[in-house]
Length: 200
Image (cartoon, rainbow, N blue to C red; front, side, top):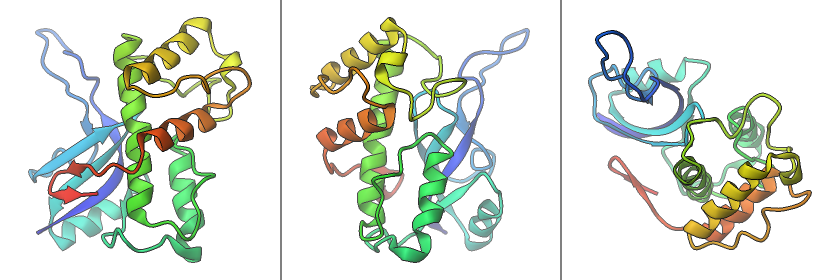
């Protein structure tokens, strides 16, 4: 058994369902039902999680065959490199995670620390805005400009940055959401974090 990192879809509503109501927690698809140790970081209410799971080689392989799962290489201090760059960028963009800043010479550790900044900001947004609504979806994507958003959403994005002690002045005008997220993550810095038994 060894700990590995994956980007996986989310299942579960996070709310009681049925009659009588039963818990339906948000959890990582495939991983949650394996009966293994796992820990996850979600992207607010977006349907994706970064998951660390303690699995054997056979289970690791079986997870990777799912088209909606992306495994993060175990050697986190390796550079992404020319062979993997388009795979990494595509895996991020389809999940509404900005990828234009990702280059061949950054390491997977730097990539993950930046993703943690994206995740933390969108998590906090859900709390500040008191909403389970998706940030991305429908007509809103990474290229949506701040001035195209409803006023309440703009104000909540700015309040989210402020609540984290970050500069909110860039969350305005024609700035796209992809730029907003990267600016926020840059302010967040390359702080280390732990997920399961993996320190990034």
